[in-house]
Image (tube, rainbow, N blue to C red; front, top):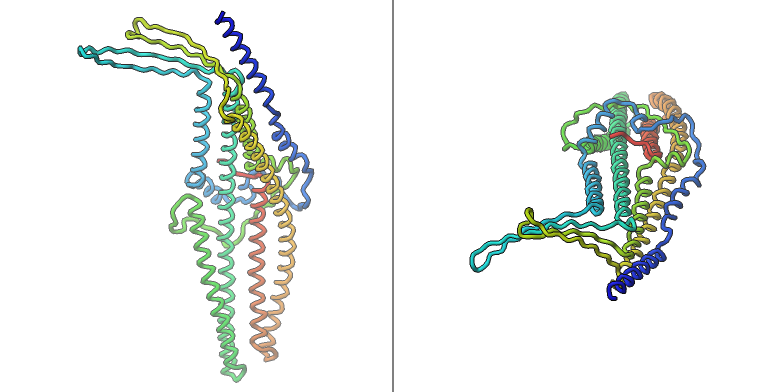
Amino acid sequence: MKGPHLLYRSISLFIFFSLTGCSLSTNNNHFQAVAQNELTTLSSWQNQQEKAHETTQLTELINIPQLTQLIQQAIQDNPDLQQVSMTLKIAYAQRGIVNSDRIPHITTRLNTHKHEENDINHDSDFTVSWEVDLWQKIQNNVSAADMDIASAKTNYQATLDTLAANIIRTWLSISLYQQLINIEKARLTSLQNNETFIVERYKNGLGSLEDLDNASSSSASTQATLANYQEVLSQHIRTLTLLLGKTPTKKTFHISDKFPAVLQPLASIPTQDLARRPDLQSAYFLILAEQYRTQAAYKDLLPSINISAAFVGEEFFKNPVWELLSQLTAPLFLGGKLRSKVEIAQLTTEKAYWHYQSTLLNAVNEVEKTLGQEQSLSRQQEHIQHALQTAHRSFSHYQKKYSQGLVDIIDLLTIQQQTFNLQTQLTQLIYNRLTNRISLGLALGLGVSS
Protein backbone atom coordinates (compact mmCIF):
# COMPACT_ATOMS: atom_id res chain seq x y z
CA MET A 1 0.00 0.00 0.00
CA LYS A 2 2.95 2.28 0.44
CA GLY A 3 3.61 2.50 -3.30
CA PRO A 4 0.19 3.88 -4.36
CA HIS A 5 0.07 6.13 -1.29
CA LEU A 6 3.49 7.59 -2.11
CA LEU A 7 2.48 8.12 -5.74
CA TYR A 8 -0.71 9.88 -4.61
CA ARG A 9 1.26 12.20 -2.34
CA SER A 10 3.76 13.01 -5.11
CA ILE A 11 0.98 13.88 -7.54
CA SER A 12 -0.73 16.01 -4.87
CA LEU A 13 2.48 17.91 -4.15
CA PHE A 14 3.05 18.39 -7.87
CA ILE A 15 -0.40 19.92 -8.37
CA PHE A 16 -0.07 22.02 -5.21
CA PHE A 17 3.22 23.59 -6.26
CA SER A 18 1.99 24.11 -9.81
CA LEU A 19 -1.06 26.03 -8.58
CA THR A 20 1.05 27.95 -6.08
CA GLY A 21 3.54 28.99 -8.73
CA CYS A 22 0.82 30.02 -11.14
CA SER A 23 -0.91 32.08 -8.47
CA LEU A 24 2.34 33.95 -7.77
CA SER A 25 2.90 34.86 -11.41
CA THR A 26 1.92 38.28 -12.66
CA ASN A 27 1.55 40.01 -15.96
CA ASN A 28 5.03 41.48 -15.99
CA ASN A 29 4.85 42.26 -19.69
CA HIS A 30 2.98 45.52 -19.09
CA PHE A 31 6.30 47.40 -18.93
CA GLN A 32 6.98 46.32 -22.49
CA ALA A 33 3.54 47.54 -23.59
CA VAL A 34 3.93 50.86 -21.78
CA ALA A 35 7.36 51.40 -23.35
CA GLN A 36 5.96 50.74 -26.81
CA ASN A 37 3.14 53.19 -26.17
CA GLU A 38 5.50 55.97 -25.08
CA LEU A 39 6.68 56.64 -28.63
CA THR A 40 3.17 56.90 -30.04
CA THR A 41 2.35 59.81 -27.72
CA LEU A 42 4.79 62.03 -29.67
CA SER A 43 3.04 63.31 -32.80
CA SER A 44 5.45 65.98 -34.02
CA TRP A 45 8.50 68.04 -33.12
CA GLN A 46 7.98 71.50 -31.69
CA ASN A 47 10.55 73.25 -33.87
CA GLN A 48 10.11 73.44 -37.62
CA GLN A 49 12.88 73.11 -40.19
CA GLU A 50 13.87 74.79 -43.42
CA LYS A 51 16.08 73.32 -46.16
CA ALA A 52 16.49 69.97 -44.40
CA HIS A 53 17.57 66.82 -46.22
CA GLU A 54 16.37 63.25 -45.74
CA THR A 55 19.38 61.13 -44.80
CA THR A 56 20.07 57.79 -43.16
CA GLN A 57 23.82 57.97 -42.45
CA LEU A 58 25.98 60.49 -40.61
CA THR A 59 28.50 60.41 -43.45
CA GLU A 60 25.79 61.65 -45.82
CA LEU A 61 25.73 64.96 -43.95
CA ILE A 62 29.34 65.79 -44.88
CA ASN A 63 30.63 64.51 -48.21
CA ILE A 64 34.40 64.21 -47.75
CA PRO A 65 35.84 60.87 -48.99
CA GLN A 66 38.97 61.21 -46.85
CA LEU A 67 36.86 61.71 -43.74
CA THR A 68 34.79 58.63 -44.57
CA GLN A 69 38.01 56.62 -44.93
CA LEU A 70 39.22 57.82 -41.54
CA ILE A 71 35.95 56.69 -39.95
CA GLN A 72 36.36 53.25 -41.51
CA GLN A 73 39.93 53.14 -40.20
CA ALA A 74 38.70 54.01 -36.69
CA ILE A 75 36.16 51.18 -36.85
CA GLN A 76 39.05 48.75 -37.23
CA ASP A 77 41.56 50.31 -34.83
CA ASN A 78 39.77 52.32 -32.12
CA PRO A 79 40.42 50.44 -28.83
CA ASP A 80 37.25 51.65 -27.08
CA LEU A 81 35.09 50.38 -29.93
CA GLN A 82 36.94 47.07 -29.93
CA GLN A 83 36.21 46.66 -26.22
CA VAL A 84 32.49 47.07 -26.90
CA SER A 85 32.86 44.53 -29.70
CA MET A 86 34.33 42.07 -27.20
CA THR A 87 31.36 42.70 -24.90
CA LEU A 88 29.07 41.65 -27.75
CA LYS A 89 31.07 38.47 -28.31
CA ILE A 90 30.89 37.72 -24.58
CA ALA A 91 27.08 38.08 -24.76
CA TYR A 92 27.01 35.44 -27.51
CA ALA A 93 29.17 33.12 -25.39
CA GLN A 94 26.95 33.61 -22.34
CA ARG A 95 23.94 32.73 -24.44
CA GLY A 96 25.66 29.46 -25.31
CA ILE A 97 26.08 28.69 -21.61
CA VAL A 98 22.39 29.28 -20.91
CA ASN A 99 21.28 27.32 -23.97
CA SER A 100 23.37 24.33 -22.90
CA ASP A 101 20.84 23.65 -20.10
CA ARG A 102 18.35 22.52 -22.77
CA ILE A 103 20.72 19.82 -24.01
CA PRO A 104 21.34 16.52 -22.17
CA HIS A 105 24.59 16.59 -20.19
CA ILE A 106 26.98 13.67 -20.51
CA THR A 107 29.73 12.94 -18.00
CA THR A 108 32.12 10.05 -17.67
CA ARG A 109 34.51 8.94 -14.97
CA LEU A 110 37.29 6.37 -14.81
CA ASN A 111 38.37 5.04 -11.41
CA THR A 112 41.47 3.01 -10.64
CA HIS A 113 41.74 0.94 -7.43
CA LYS A 114 44.90 -0.68 -6.06
CA HIS A 115 44.47 -3.49 -3.51
CA GLU A 116 46.88 -4.90 -0.95
CA GLU A 117 47.65 -7.83 -3.23
CA ASN A 118 48.87 -5.24 -5.74
CA ASP A 119 45.96 -6.00 -7.98
CA ILE A 120 44.74 -3.00 -9.94
CA ASN A 121 41.07 -2.80 -10.86
CA HIS A 122 39.36 -0.31 -13.11
CA ASP A 123 35.74 0.70 -13.12
CA SER A 124 33.97 3.47 -14.96
CA ASP A 125 30.62 5.15 -15.20
CA PHE A 126 28.91 7.08 -17.91
CA THR A 127 25.99 9.37 -16.99
CA VAL A 128 23.47 11.17 -19.17
CA SER A 129 21.27 13.72 -17.40
CA TRP A 130 18.59 16.03 -18.70
CA GLU A 131 16.24 18.52 -17.08
CA VAL A 132 12.81 18.50 -18.69
CA ASP A 133 11.91 22.10 -19.50
CA LEU A 134 8.36 21.51 -18.32
CA TRP A 135 7.51 25.15 -17.62
CA GLN A 136 9.71 26.68 -20.35
CA LYS A 137 11.97 28.14 -17.64
CA ILE A 138 15.14 27.33 -19.56
CA GLN A 139 13.58 28.79 -22.69
CA ASN A 140 12.84 32.00 -20.77
CA ASN A 141 16.50 32.26 -19.75
CA VAL A 142 17.58 31.62 -23.34
CA SER A 143 15.18 34.31 -24.56
CA ALA A 144 16.63 36.70 -21.97
CA ALA A 145 20.11 35.93 -23.29
CA ASP A 146 18.88 36.65 -26.82
CA MET A 147 17.67 40.06 -25.65
CA ASP A 148 21.04 40.66 -23.98
CA ILE A 149 22.67 40.02 -27.34
CA ALA A 150 20.26 42.41 -29.07
CA SER A 151 21.03 45.04 -26.42
CA ALA A 152 24.78 44.51 -26.82
CA LYS A 153 24.45 44.90 -30.60
CA THR A 154 22.70 48.23 -30.25
CA ASN A 155 25.25 49.35 -27.63
CA TYR A 156 27.97 48.60 -30.15
CA GLN A 157 26.13 50.61 -32.79
CA ALA A 158 25.68 53.52 -30.37
CA THR A 159 29.40 53.52 -29.58
CA LEU A 160 30.21 53.34 -33.29
CA ASP A 161 27.88 56.25 -34.12
CA THR A 162 29.30 58.38 -31.31
CA LEU A 163 32.84 57.62 -32.47
CA ALA A 164 31.99 58.70 -36.02
CA ALA A 165 30.33 61.88 -34.77
CA ASN A 166 33.36 62.73 -32.62
CA ILE A 167 35.69 62.25 -35.58
CA ILE A 168 33.56 64.60 -37.70
CA ARG A 169 33.39 67.17 -34.90
CA THR A 170 37.16 67.01 -34.39
CA TRP A 171 37.68 67.40 -38.14
CA LEU A 172 35.56 70.56 -38.05
CA SER A 173 37.40 71.77 -34.93
CA ILE A 174 40.73 71.52 -36.75
CA SER A 175 39.28 73.55 -39.62
CA LEU A 176 37.91 76.08 -37.11
CA TYR A 177 41.25 76.72 -35.40
CA GLN A 178 43.08 76.93 -38.70
CA GLN A 179 40.69 79.75 -39.62
CA LEU A 180 41.01 81.42 -36.22
CA ILE A 181 44.78 81.33 -36.57
CA ASN A 182 44.50 82.96 -39.99
CA ILE A 183 42.29 85.69 -38.52
CA GLU A 184 44.75 86.36 -35.70
CA LYS A 185 47.65 86.46 -38.15
CA ALA A 186 45.75 89.01 -40.23
CA ARG A 187 44.98 90.98 -37.06
CA LEU A 188 48.66 90.91 -36.07
CA THR A 189 49.76 92.04 -39.54
CA SER A 190 47.30 94.92 -39.41
CA LEU A 191 48.48 95.96 -35.95
CA GLN A 192 52.13 95.84 -37.02
CA ASN A 193 51.27 97.97 -40.03
CA ASN A 194 49.62 100.40 -37.63
CA GLU A 195 52.84 100.57 -35.60
CA THR A 196 54.82 101.40 -38.74
CA PHE A 197 52.27 104.01 -39.71
CA ILE A 198 52.37 105.56 -36.21
CA VAL A 199 56.17 105.81 -36.32
CA GLU A 200 56.01 107.55 -39.70
CA ARG A 201 53.41 110.01 -38.41
CA TYR A 202 55.52 110.67 -35.32
CA LYS A 203 58.54 111.43 -37.49
CA ASN A 204 56.40 113.92 -39.36
CA GLY A 205 55.43 115.59 -36.11
CA LEU A 206 52.00 113.98 -35.82
CA GLY A 207 50.75 111.86 -32.93
CA SER A 208 52.77 110.70 -29.95
CA LEU A 209 54.72 107.72 -28.70
CA GLU A 210 51.71 106.81 -26.52
CA ASP A 211 49.98 105.81 -29.73
CA LEU A 212 52.84 103.40 -30.41
CA ASP A 213 52.56 101.92 -26.91
CA ASN A 214 48.84 101.29 -27.40
CA ALA A 215 49.44 99.60 -30.76
CA SER A 216 52.31 97.50 -29.36
CA SER A 217 50.11 96.37 -26.46
CA SER A 218 47.42 95.17 -28.87
CA SER A 219 50.05 93.34 -30.96
CA ALA A 220 51.40 91.52 -27.90
CA SER A 221 47.90 90.47 -26.85
CA THR A 222 47.22 89.14 -30.34
CA GLN A 223 50.48 87.16 -30.32
CA ALA A 224 49.42 85.52 -27.06
CA THR A 225 46.03 84.59 -28.52
CA LEU A 226 47.73 83.24 -31.64
CA ALA A 227 50.04 81.03 -29.56
CA ASN A 228 47.03 79.66 -27.66
CA TYR A 229 45.14 78.86 -30.88
CA GLN A 230 48.16 77.08 -32.33
CA GLU A 231 48.40 74.84 -29.26
CA VAL A 232 44.66 74.09 -29.29
CA LEU A 233 44.97 73.17 -32.98
CA SER A 234 47.76 70.73 -32.13
CA GLN A 235 45.59 69.21 -29.38
CA HIS A 236 42.70 68.62 -31.79
CA ILE A 237 45.06 66.98 -34.28
CA ARG A 238 46.29 64.66 -31.51
CA THR A 239 42.70 63.95 -30.48
CA LEU A 240 41.78 62.97 -34.04
CA THR A 241 44.79 60.66 -34.18
CA LEU A 242 43.72 58.97 -30.95
CA LEU A 243 40.14 58.55 -32.20
CA LEU A 244 41.58 56.73 -35.19
CA GLY A 245 43.23 54.28 -32.81
CA LYS A 246 46.80 55.43 -33.27
CA THR A 247 49.41 56.96 -31.01
CA PRO A 248 49.93 60.71 -31.55
CA THR A 249 52.31 61.18 -34.49
CA LYS A 250 52.96 63.68 -37.21
CA LYS A 251 49.82 64.80 -39.01
CA THR A 252 49.11 62.36 -41.82
CA PHE A 253 45.93 63.94 -43.16
CA HIS A 254 45.06 67.22 -44.82
CA ILE A 255 42.15 69.28 -43.54
CA SER A 256 41.10 72.41 -45.37
CA ASP A 257 41.01 75.76 -43.56
CA LYS A 258 37.56 76.32 -45.03
CA PHE A 259 34.45 74.71 -43.62
CA PRO A 260 32.88 71.96 -45.73
CA ALA A 261 29.18 71.90 -46.48
CA VAL A 262 27.22 70.05 -43.78
CA LEU A 263 23.61 69.17 -44.52
CA GLN A 264 20.82 69.65 -42.03
CA PRO A 265 19.16 66.24 -41.45
CA LEU A 266 15.39 66.07 -41.72
CA ALA A 267 13.46 65.47 -38.50
CA SER A 268 10.27 63.74 -39.58
CA ILE A 269 7.93 61.76 -37.31
CA PRO A 270 9.21 61.27 -33.73
CA THR A 271 8.20 57.61 -33.73
CA GLN A 272 10.24 57.00 -36.86
CA ASP A 273 13.19 59.15 -35.81
CA LEU A 274 13.59 57.90 -32.25
CA ALA A 275 13.02 54.26 -33.20
CA ARG A 276 16.34 54.43 -35.05
CA ARG A 277 18.29 55.43 -31.94
CA PRO A 278 20.43 52.51 -30.76
CA ASP A 279 20.44 53.66 -27.12
CA LEU A 280 16.63 53.57 -27.07
CA GLN A 281 16.61 50.16 -28.74
CA SER A 282 19.11 48.88 -26.20
CA ALA A 283 16.96 50.13 -23.30
CA TYR A 284 13.90 48.43 -24.79
CA PHE A 285 15.70 45.10 -25.27
CA LEU A 286 16.83 45.33 -21.65
CA ILE A 287 13.18 45.48 -20.55
CA LEU A 288 12.43 42.34 -22.55
CA ALA A 289 15.46 40.54 -21.10
CA GLU A 290 14.43 41.33 -17.53
CA GLN A 291 10.84 40.28 -18.20
CA TYR A 292 12.07 36.87 -19.37
CA ARG A 293 14.25 36.57 -16.27
CA THR A 294 11.27 37.45 -14.08
CA GLN A 295 9.24 34.68 -15.70
CA ALA A 296 12.10 32.25 -15.07
CA ALA A 297 12.30 33.39 -11.44
CA TYR A 298 8.60 32.60 -10.97
CA LYS A 299 9.09 29.17 -12.48
CA ASP A 300 11.84 28.39 -10.00
CA LEU A 301 8.95 28.07 -7.52
CA LEU A 302 7.51 25.17 -9.54
CA PRO A 303 8.54 21.50 -9.45
CA SER A 304 11.27 20.34 -11.82
CA ILE A 305 11.78 16.96 -13.48
CA ASN A 306 15.25 15.54 -14.07
CA ILE A 307 15.92 12.34 -16.01
CA SER A 308 19.26 10.57 -15.90
CA ALA A 309 20.69 7.34 -17.23
CA ALA A 310 23.77 5.81 -15.62
CA PHE A 311 25.99 3.13 -17.15
CA VAL A 312 28.43 1.49 -14.77
CA GLY A 313 30.65 -1.54 -14.68
CA GLU A 314 34.21 -2.74 -14.51
CA GLU A 315 34.13 -3.69 -18.17
CA PHE A 316 32.05 -0.80 -19.35
CA PHE A 317 32.45 -1.26 -23.05
CA LYS A 318 31.97 -5.06 -22.91
CA ASN A 319 29.22 -5.64 -20.38
CA PRO A 320 27.82 -2.36 -18.97
CA VAL A 321 25.08 -2.16 -16.38
CA TRP A 322 22.65 0.67 -16.80
CA GLU A 323 19.81 2.21 -14.86
CA LEU A 324 17.31 4.91 -15.73
CA LEU A 325 16.30 7.39 -13.02
CA SER A 326 13.73 10.15 -12.96
CA GLN A 327 13.50 12.71 -10.21
CA LEU A 328 10.74 15.13 -9.32
CA THR A 329 11.88 17.96 -7.05
CA ALA A 330 9.91 20.88 -5.67
CA PRO A 331 10.98 23.66 -3.31
CA LEU A 332 9.39 23.41 0.13
CA PHE A 333 11.22 25.83 2.38
CA LEU A 334 14.30 27.84 1.42
CA GLY A 335 13.95 30.69 3.85
CA GLY A 336 12.22 32.94 1.32
CA LYS A 337 15.20 32.78 -1.05
CA LEU A 338 13.18 32.08 -4.19
CA ARG A 339 10.51 34.65 -3.38
CA SER A 340 13.24 37.24 -2.82
CA LYS A 341 14.68 36.34 -6.21
CA VAL A 342 11.25 36.91 -7.76
CA GLU A 343 10.97 40.28 -6.07
CA ILE A 344 14.46 41.27 -7.23
CA ALA A 345 13.59 40.23 -10.79
CA GLN A 346 10.40 42.30 -10.70
CA LEU A 347 12.20 45.36 -9.38
CA THR A 348 14.99 44.93 -11.93
CA THR A 349 12.40 44.88 -14.71
CA GLU A 350 10.80 48.04 -13.40
CA LYS A 351 14.24 49.63 -13.11
CA ALA A 352 14.87 48.73 -16.78
CA TYR A 353 11.60 50.45 -17.69
CA TRP A 354 12.59 53.65 -15.90
CA HIS A 355 15.96 53.51 -17.63
CA TYR A 356 14.09 53.32 -20.93
CA GLN A 357 11.89 56.25 -19.87
CA SER A 358 14.97 58.32 -18.98
CA THR A 359 16.62 57.44 -22.29
CA LEU A 360 13.48 58.43 -24.18
CA LEU A 361 13.16 61.78 -22.41
CA ASN A 362 16.83 62.55 -23.07
CA ALA A 363 16.39 61.57 -26.71
CA VAL A 364 13.42 63.91 -27.16
CA ASN A 365 15.28 66.69 -25.39
CA GLU A 366 18.35 66.23 -27.60
CA VAL A 367 16.31 66.47 -30.79
CA GLU A 368 14.32 69.51 -29.65
CA LYS A 369 17.48 71.19 -28.36
CA THR A 370 19.41 70.73 -31.60
CA LEU A 371 16.42 71.80 -33.71
CA GLY A 372 16.10 74.95 -31.63
CA GLN A 373 19.83 75.56 -31.85
CA GLU A 374 19.71 75.34 -35.65
CA GLN A 375 17.18 78.17 -35.77
CA SER A 376 18.96 80.28 -33.16
CA LEU A 377 22.41 79.88 -34.74
CA SER A 378 20.98 80.71 -38.14
CA ARG A 379 19.59 84.01 -36.87
CA GLN A 380 22.79 84.80 -34.98
CA GLN A 381 24.85 84.15 -38.09
CA GLU A 382 22.72 86.56 -40.14
CA HIS A 383 23.08 89.31 -37.52
CA ILE A 384 26.84 88.88 -37.15
CA GLN A 385 27.33 88.88 -40.92
CA HIS A 386 25.45 92.19 -41.11
CA ALA A 387 27.49 93.60 -38.20
CA LEU A 388 30.74 92.52 -39.86
CA GLN A 389 29.83 94.31 -43.08
CA THR A 390 29.11 97.48 -41.11
CA ALA A 391 32.36 97.13 -39.16
CA HIS A 392 34.40 96.86 -42.37
CA ARG A 393 32.89 100.12 -43.61
CA SER A 394 33.49 101.82 -40.24
CA PHE A 395 37.12 100.68 -40.13
CA SER A 396 37.80 102.12 -43.58
CA HIS A 397 36.12 105.35 -42.53
CA TYR A 398 38.19 105.59 -39.28
CA GLN A 399 41.45 104.92 -41.12
CA LYS A 400 40.85 107.98 -43.29
CA LYS A 401 39.94 110.09 -40.27
CA TYR A 402 43.04 108.97 -38.36
CA SER A 403 45.33 109.79 -41.26
CA GLN A 404 43.76 113.26 -41.25
CA GLY A 405 44.24 113.61 -37.48
CA LEU A 406 40.50 113.74 -36.80
CA VAL A 407 40.47 110.73 -34.42
CA ASP A 408 43.11 109.25 -32.13
CA ILE A 409 44.71 105.81 -32.27
CA ILE A 410 42.44 104.40 -29.55
CA ASP A 411 39.37 104.94 -31.73
CA LEU A 412 41.08 103.32 -34.69
CA LEU A 413 42.30 100.31 -32.69
CA THR A 414 38.85 99.87 -31.13
CA ILE A 415 37.04 99.66 -34.45
CA GLN A 416 39.83 97.48 -35.86
CA GLN A 417 39.61 95.06 -32.95
CA GLN A 418 35.83 95.01 -33.29
CA THR A 419 36.15 93.99 -36.94
CA PHE A 420 38.48 91.09 -36.23
CA ASN A 421 36.41 90.05 -33.20
CA LEU A 422 33.33 89.86 -35.41
CA GLN A 423 35.23 87.71 -37.90
CA THR A 424 36.20 85.37 -35.07
CA GLN A 425 32.63 85.33 -33.74
CA LEU A 426 31.20 84.57 -37.18
CA THR A 427 33.66 81.72 -37.73
CA GLN A 428 32.76 80.25 -34.32
CA LEU A 429 29.04 80.54 -35.08
CA ILE A 430 29.41 78.71 -38.38
CA TYR A 431 31.36 75.98 -36.61
CA ASN A 432 28.70 75.71 -33.90
CA ARG A 433 25.99 75.44 -36.52
CA LEU A 434 27.79 72.71 -38.46
CA THR A 435 28.60 70.63 -35.37
CA ASN A 436 25.03 71.11 -34.16
CA ARG A 437 23.85 69.46 -37.38
CA ILE A 438 26.06 66.46 -36.59
CA SER A 439 24.54 66.35 -33.10
CA LEU A 440 21.07 66.56 -34.64
CA GLY A 441 21.86 63.62 -36.91
CA LEU A 442 23.06 61.61 -33.93
CA ALA A 443 19.93 62.56 -31.96
CA LEU A 444 17.74 61.40 -34.85
CA GLY A 445 19.41 57.99 -34.86
CA LEU A 446 21.61 58.49 -37.94
CA GLY A 447 24.64 56.25 -37.74
CA VAL A 448 27.35 54.64 -39.80
CA SER A 449 27.78 51.17 -41.20
CA SER A 450 30.54 49.00 -39.82
